[in-house]
Image (cartoon, rainbow, N blue to C red; front, side):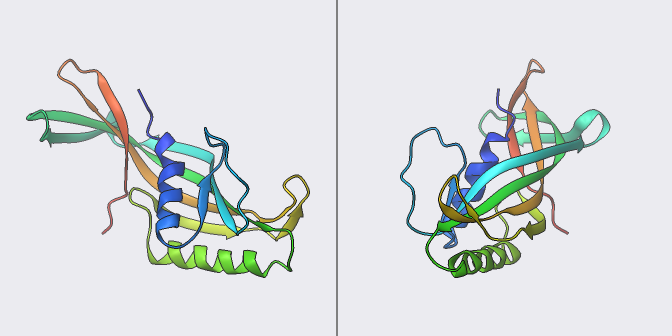
Length: 167
């Protein structure tokens, strides 16, 4: 059974790429070539969960596929995502600044489905000797709901990443 957290990095990277910010996930399963452009590397730095309701009970939902009602359980999660920016070492860091400006613009105008961006912060651009690139660390603190349903026998099915209800 999954916890839903494995979806977070991929969902954020897909969202950023679809909005014109080049992004990859940290620690990919397959080897990749070093990009010659500025790229955001998405990682999960922290996760803090809170109860979602009385014993994490969120209510009932009708499952169209099975034609049955299922009970939903879940927890509210506060996730810290690393969106570290890397750029080729040549240059004065302008490419990193441009990428950060674009990243902020994208996350202020929209949010990835299931992730509500609450905080965005960055550090200084530095030369990363290990990768021989310029690096600017970026943190995005997001809120999400990790929810799961139960089958007819009461066993949990896979968790889903759900967004925060907007008022």
